Structure formats: C-alpha cells, structure tokens
Length: 610
Ligand code: GDP
Ligand code: PGA
Ligand code: MN
Ligand code: MN
Image (cartoon, rainbow, N blue to C red):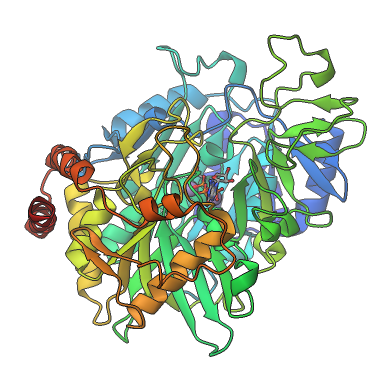
C-alpha cells in the first residue's frame, strides 16, 4: 500500500482537496506507489518507458508506442454522461443517473491498480490568466505511464496549476484505470469498458482503454465533454473546433476562424496548413488550435475564443511533405514526438504510415506493422493490409508547430470572425457556402451530416448527423444545446459570419476527390474573409452564397474544370431530399428552439422555390 502523504509531500502538492481525492482513489484501486508528475519529469519518464518496453525509440529522440489491437479509437457507445438530473438526457450523451455510474465504476476498479504506480497529473486546460481559468484545472490520476507522457505534451502539467486555486476545491477529478485490456470483451455484448463523465460533479471515471481519445482525460473528457456542460451552466461554449488566423501579409490584418469538423475530417491539417505557393506571398495561416475551442462573448461585443490544449494529437495517415509540410516539421527529430500505431522499423528506428511516401519502403528488413507483426513474414492473403492503423497518431507539443500564432497563450483569447462547419460529405455540399444569419448558422451546425471516420470504433464510412461535430462529446440535451448557442451568440453585437465547407466531395463514378484539398483549402478561407469584408459578392443559393469562379483565387490550382463546376453548384434535387432527412433528424431533439425550426422552414421553402 502506497504512502500517499509522503509522495504528495515530496512533490510539494499542498492543496488539501487534491490530497484527499488522491488518497481516496489510491485506497480504492490499491495502487502500490503514488507519484506526482510535472512537465519536468518528461525525460526521466520517457527513459523509464523505454526501459520497460512501453515505448520504442525513434530516431531523433522521438518514441513509438503500439496499443492493444482492440484499443485504437474512441468508443462512443461506451461513453456515458451521468448527472443527478434526468432532464440532462439527450439523444447522444447516453445519459445515466450518477449513482448508478459511480457504483458500477467502483466495482470495476476495486483493487485494479495493485502492484502498479498511480501517477498524479495536475493540469490546466487554458492559457494561464484566462477568464475561464476557473473551469480549466484538473487532476488526472492514471496507472499508465504512456498516458502521462501524452498528457505532458497535450496539456499544461505541474503542481503549480493546482496548489493555488482561488477555490481550492474547484478542480476536475479525472480517474483513469487502464484495466486488463486483453480481457475486456471490446465490441462484444460483454464489453467491460466504461467511460463516465459525472458532469454535475465535475468528475471523470474512465475504465478500459489507454487510447488517447479515451485516456487523455484533460483533453477530451474534461476539455471538451465536461467543459461543455460547465459552459452551458456558466455562459460559454465549448466545441470540437480548430482555431486559426488568416493573416494578410500585405495589410497585416488577421481574421480568426473556428471550424467544427468531425474527428479525422481535417481540423489539424487546416490549422497547420501552408498557403499554396501562388498565394504564399500574401496569406499565411496562424495556428491557435486544432481540436478544441472555448468561446465566450467578450465585453466589446465580439465572440472570443482560445484553445485549452498545449499540443497536437494528429492523424498520421497522408501526412507528408506535400500535403502538410508544417505538420512534418512539427514531428521531426528533436520534437519529442510520440507516434502511436504507425509502422515501426526495429532496426533503423524509423516510422512509416500510408501516405507518408507514395510507396512503402522497399527494403522490408526490420519493419513491423502497427500490430507488431513482421512485414517480411506476411502471407499473400495479408500482403495488402495497411502497415499503419488508419487512426495512427502523432503527439507533439504546440511549441513544435512552425505556424504557431504569437498570441496563442494570450489569456484574453482572440476575436472570432467566422464559424465554419464541414465534414466528409461525398455529395451535395459544395466547396464552401456562407451565410450571416445566426439562427441559420446554428441550424447548419446542428444538421452537419458527414461520413463517420476511423477515429471512432466500428463506424468508418457511416453517414450520420454530427451536430457541430460534437456528437461524441455532447454532455446535455440537444434542444438546450441549441438554445445555449443562440444565447451566447445573442450576447454578441458583432456577429461572426458562418460557412459550410467540404473538401471531400467525390466523383460518383470513380470516387476521386473533386477538390485537391490540403493546402488548396486556403483558397476557400480567403474567399470567406473577402466575402465578410464585402470584397466579393458570391452567387446566392437557397443554402448560402457560393463563390463564383472569378472570385476564387485559382492561380496555380490543378483541377478538372468539370470538377470545379460541380464544387461550385448546388444540386437542388439532392437538397430537397436532404431537407426531408433533416426534418427527421431535428425532430429527435427535445425542446429545439422555435428559431431553429424557423431557419429550417426558411431554407426548405427557398429550396422548394429554386
Ligand atoms: P482532424 O482529426 O479533424 O484533425 O483531421 P486531420 O487533419 O487529422 O485529417 C484526418 C485525415 O483526413 C488525415 O488522414 C488527412 O490526411 C485527411 N485530410 C485532411 N485534410 C484533407 C483534405 O483537404 N483533403 C483530403 N482528401 N484529405 C484530407
Ligand atoms: P481529432 O481528435 O478530432 O483530431 O480526430 C481526436 C478525437 O476527436 O478523437
Ligand atoms: Mn477531435
Ligand atoms: Mn486533429
């Protein structure tokens, strides 16, 4: 049994409420040792993880981890938001009464950490000094060293963030117990994984995974899911949004954009993107965040936002020098990057994933796939299997991102000029359409329909609605959520412009992406800013303004003219059908505000009249 007091004293952890919380869970889980960690412990912990075989070395001081094969993505159906108020039940949050959740969790983790170290990770999910700092402090306790190493990259970590709280008891209690991964029945009727957020008690109780999206509790469970509940109760918004600035290098003007795209649909790439060469003299994208934004109405009447994170947890697939040179820079030797579930060469200590280079390495010697199986030993049946898991990831700290905005840690946040939604939509959605009406903007977010991706277990390719890209993180009822959006934006006097973007429209015959994507996406953002500033008129349609061909800066773009035409037109028949689907979708939301229904009827009537 661990001497918890001694461990906490040694680390200078003085907050009595944190001490009590740690002791409680050390007792329940039966951890043998307790260790408080901060960012300074990184090098030592990396070495320990290498020595223990939890990580493998990658050239240039980077590392590699392979997860249990059935533990590679978020598990949405196992994720539960519990409260003591049944009216918090929504369509997507898998609501349960908190007593039931807590009782079940206790039975799962009793004695589960015997013989293990329990790491105590105090963190802050906000720039220091932020007006929302009160909601940002937390302490994750975890029995997995690699989770600690990810947390150190993804959040501000150290006892200083927890010792001096204005309200010492106001921190998120985030408990992570890995469990015996090979014996949890993942994906079977006897699935033993439970990922609970007890939202009204600001407590997170996760059991059964060490995958980032399930185990980095500061990031997703607190920074997104629980914080969105806090935001609802306290007048701010928390969204799965990228946050970037479009800088005009000639005028020095910067316009900030937040963007909600479902997991693995292009947020990280867009926020790190480099403008295409022909636009590069004029425009630059500044990185603030790639996955989460907290937004609130500022005193000057504008909407403000910051990124609560400290690092990037990015999808590896198709990241290369051409698609995203900025991301490649952010994970190069010397960055301390951790790669997860990519392919690994145990002789040369290199990593590879599909799309890193056109062809996989020709010399197969030393290469292992993401499951740890030798590529050279593959049979003809398995020869074509991917080397890396589609949801393989890199984890790197924000300081490594070359286009990091100067003011990224400014506690005042940045004013938001535009809110965009997007996803993998193979038809219907044009390259970009913009609109200014707030209710229509919220309506558009609520009806975001896209193909689910490999970032969630077992759902790849399924077409579904993913409101504001928050479906996996929704913590309360959708009707209340919509009203909260209207309320927060209603407090602003200078409204952001809205847009819907789609980089993923496909040719119905051969399936190729009509739009080349990646760096070229900057062209659509520039059009949006120009449209906000009244510099372009656009082509009006029932679902918003779309660019004319003359307005899009096309110089240097390689695209089939027919493809471009399709990207810049609206398929009215297809939209008529969509309106019917939307109606069914929205009807499921209890208490949806009348303003949203009005927006829906307006759009429907305009489409009918077209
Ligand atoms: P996030 O999870 O929303 O942050 O998405 P990422 O930026 O990590 O991208 C997820 C996957 O989509 C990666 O495999 C990217 O290579 C791919 N992707 C991102 N942007 C584009 C794009 O503009 N076009 C295409 N075709 N693929 C993209
Ligand atoms: P993503 O982040 O949106 O970049 O995929 C992780 C997640 O949402 O699971
Ligand atoms: Mn995400
Ligand atoms: Mn991302």
